[in-house]
Length: 193
Length: 258
Image (tube, rainbow over all chains, first blue to last red; front, side):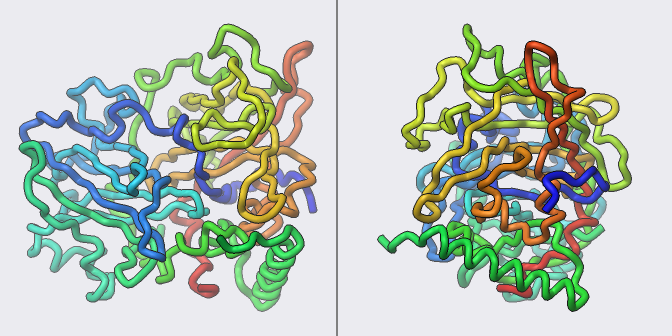
């Protein structure tokens, strides 16, 4: 077996993030796309569980989304937040109970679809990350015509829609739990070119 | 607690899966470019891979663009992992250089690359790493940079050591450096590991072997490049990274093996 194959412009394979990213990937305010006192701040939070229904204590989540008016940011500063610029990117590790929390704003609809936040899941044991989307429960009408939700079997669609669960510190709160396996296994997406 | 498998048992599982993958190719399947999410020799994958087929959809604008990073995010000094403390870290000083490209060989310019690794003794600066190898007060093992105009990158670091883990009895990871990459589209997002040529642990490692195609696995191995070695200072490795994103994911194979 050759030890090295010259670059042939073929995809570099994925490998797991492993258990020991905690000193490297999370960064200060990574989970706060806006400060908590932003007038339109929302909480997007949930728990990541495995096939035994057990919370995963070492998952890493990233979100990527448009701003409130549906515009995708091209601003730098996601890693070194200035507290004012909305970059649309966030990253956080779950806590020991498998729970994550982002502070952000609800994105506006982009190009006519229903508003959503793109969620990426990395974890030890997950050799290739997973993409999913967190939609918002109040956009019932837009969900009817959303191309991605329409591609999902009806009985699994609910796994892509967050649940309004009240108010947290003045911010509207949405719960988006992620099940890697099991009866409520989250729908994960494979983006074709 | 269940009894741990032996290396022989794990190796037999690895070989059986690879033999099956070879058969699939002989029957006309395309080689798998990515690891299998469900790869039982890597025990942690068993309860953490989705059992449903991924739902295939077209990326929309959100997925077709990527966050922007720049020197407001990353200090240029962060690409040298050997200057973060007052003294020199222990170990073999190396540079790892290459280019980040897309599937059409276009450079991925001005994009974030993050790297993390164990020290020369195979120990991570992480509170949950209990491997009884010494921590190095002069080495943290975290680097970041922004790629250049040609997608080029270069880190200065030390060669990480192999380390034991608890997947099975006497399990050892080959020496590797973790890389996190962003492309021009979020669908190209990639976290992976770079390995070093000739490592005797390759055949034994279920994480490396979870990529069942030998040619695909070999894409994770940096090459020693003497022209990148610096006299009296460091040994040079070259590793190019290709992010094709959606075009590479159509052949997801785990569904057939769930």
